[in-house]
Amino acid sequence: MQRTSFYDQISKNKRYSILLVFPIAAIVVALLFVISYIFVPSLLIFIVMFGITWMTLQAIISYKYGDRAVLSVMKAEPADPVKHAYLINTVEGLSIAAGIPAPKVYVIKSDEINAFAVGNDPQHASIGVTTGALENLNRAELEGVIGHEISHVRNYDIRFMTMIAVFVGFAAILSYLLLRGLFSGGAKGREGKGGGLIIFAILFGLILAVIAPIATRLVQAMVSRRREYLADASSVQLTRYPEGLASALEKIKNKNSEKMDVSESISHLFIADPKRSELDNLFATHPPLKKRIEILRAM
Image 1 (spheres, rainbow, N blue to C red):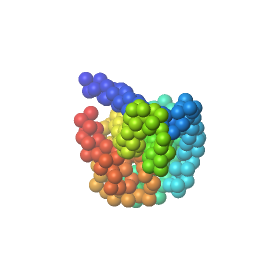
Image 2: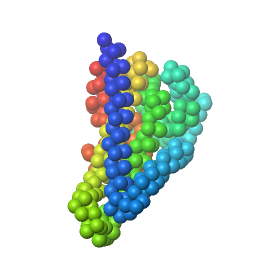
Image 3: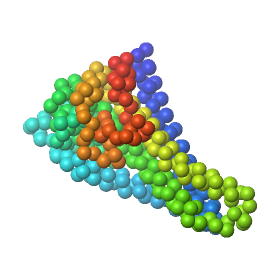
Image 4: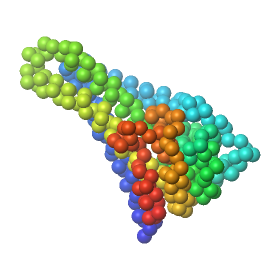
């Protein structure tokens, strides 16, 4: 019965994550449509198609080169085959269990207990672990953390979250352009040509431009949290020991200061939020550690 519940949770998290993409996509398309209809109705179809194409290109660029940028920013160094032999062996063993090639292994100098995964796909992936994690976690706990990151790689979470980030960024840009166009008088004279419909479009555009950045960031946070729960569950599937990851998260909760020098744009890649901010209560990309620990210990 416990195994059935476990697999049901994995399937449910996957479905919810995918379903949450649709509100972001709908908001972006709505913004493109409203901007085109208000300012250049003759190019409506062209602008919508161009916007979608541009987003796709941005996602491809991030997909191709995003991992190198993250490793460089974090000053990650390749794991030493002798000094970090257990770490490398753990990554290789859990990769075999997950049925994927072993990711490259990197170490980041930091007293914080944390880890992250980056890469295009399971064939081109890397895992980074902080020195704080290597010094403070025992073998079972480290295996739980590595299992979590291996799960992100296997589940294509990096590719998925890159796509979400592009949508969210594009929604913010479009909202800014729409508000600037409306307040600078870009729609002046259109009221009389479109009748009530154009007035409705302008009002709808104003509302959409204000709520779109907030709504898309909220959905992004919800998607990220779902993927974290899924990676926790998948880690247990690999290690067969929920307490290992639960104990690691408990140490993270008790020891970390959450003040790593990490940009908000990549904080969602880590197993635990590396840097707390005032916006985390609303836009947190990680579920509460206490809740994650409770779920793991109930498995």
